Image (tube, rainbow, N blue to C red; front, side):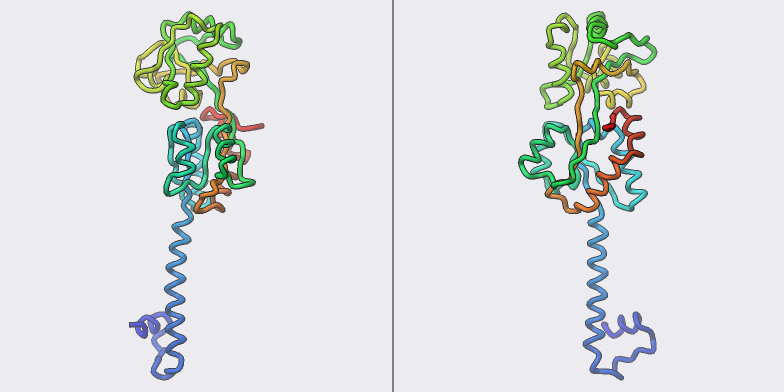
Length: 276
């Protein structure tokens, strides 16, 4: 069988019987050839990278950027979207491990202290902000200052937002804001038809507080604008290569790709503001 394969590979004129002392060399050549094919398949498979991300970055343009990266490099990007409450645990223990991890800066600090951030790979992605949404076609109120926002929310029949007790960071931020003294009297409730924006889109409430990148996907609702910056209702996000990464080289290349200036157009269009 090996003679047939070698003859096919090296030409019909090859006759191993004429050079018996070289049979072993030809067999070695054949083994090296098959080994090269085997390991090239492994290398091709290893080109895939996995990105672990929460919804705030998933909905803010990550899918579009991953598609562009794959077209330009040939590297397949597998995106795993995680609930915020599972992010740290999956970053440390999930199998197979993620190559790239995207998550809020505070969680990145925790993983760095635990030794899961590859040194020199952490970069800021940008900020997502909480915004106010109304149903499409409804006039947009002025929420440019905290007193104006308070007046608008107090005039609403029902302001819906996401459940803060399921590990949602944005919901915790909104819930904490609504418990401030100046917001006393606002009629708010946790959405029962999904997240805040989803619930409003599905007919619940007349206003919603939601991360902006999670308002844009629903044509039934319209973004009034971000909340006043002094309220601190935002999430700053980071990306880094995991120390558990199977393909750290392509993972680092992906982070460079999504943080280059050209990527900011896609991020901004979906509700994330890259660092200036």
